[in-house]
Image 1 (cartoon, rainbow, N blue to C red):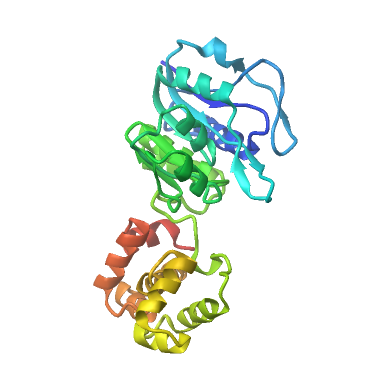
Image 2: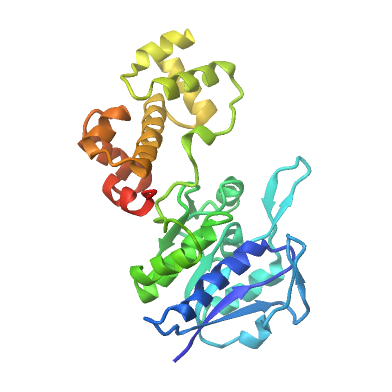
Length: 325
């Protein structure tokens, strides 16, 4: 018996948010070891062609109204982004689409959003009390507009019960592979990833960010400290020494890090070391003990605890998924 996977389609929607999940599930048909039970349908407010944010026009398979009352296995809600007067990215939410998503969700086994589609689910009342993620550019907006939603801007996707939310752009592929894995198993999902020439299948706890890619802060002083941390992360770094370098007290240093980077000096140092360890796990055959020493952790136990805390995985599992052969 076939199951229906519906991808919502509406004007200005991000194209990859639509085509990514559709491609992942379509590739199941090429897997001889499994018979795909999913039929992918693109549903829109009307039968008219839809112009996406990329300027590419997509023709829907059906309208939302035609699906009303139809059992849906998986509902995928992509997003759309506009710019405010200051040029900042904001989620574009159509109330008419929200109303239809709310209705369709009643007959859906699992509801998912990709990128800023989480804003649509939130507007439909489907994220109340749940831990969710979205694209980091609009995470603050989501948290501000929906205080009863626990927004975590870091993971690439999160599952909370029967609701899945994903981060931006290519994270839609990771979330889609996770949906496939739940239904058909990890081996099939990994084979789909290989068909797509994705060299990895990332776990949901994987961060959207790399430490060196954080935005430039407003303070030259904090930038100098950050540079020092990244240059010396493999060795011992004393918080008191950092404070002396900045010509402030340790308490003032903590306030500066909180204000500028929304973190603590110790947490920032740990994040820098995790980034070094990640690179070594991906590119070398070093033992965990050696990785720990060369990334500034000192011991493999400390390394493991840091990975669990920051990436929700272990160094061994991380290497098995991300090792560059």
